Amino acid sequence: IIKKVLESAIANAEHNDGADIDELKVKTIYVEQGATLKRFTARAKGRGNRISKPTCHVYVTVGN
Image 1 (cartoon, rainbow, N blue to C red):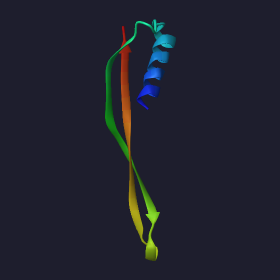
Image 2: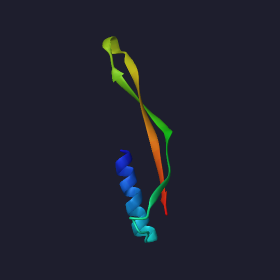
Image 3: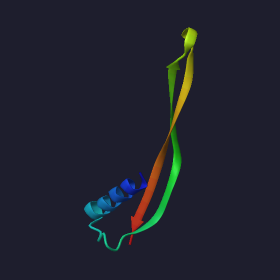
């Protein structure tokens, strides 16, 4: 996933800012906790159990 985000950041820098991709370097990269999706699954006798699906946000900053 990190590779995909990094490739996207490089492509965005090249397209939006006209940056030279050979001179780009990663300035910062960090991951933060995102929203948690709450779901229910069926169990016996009409009950249900909660399933938590955590998500995250990946931030990459590239520059010269």
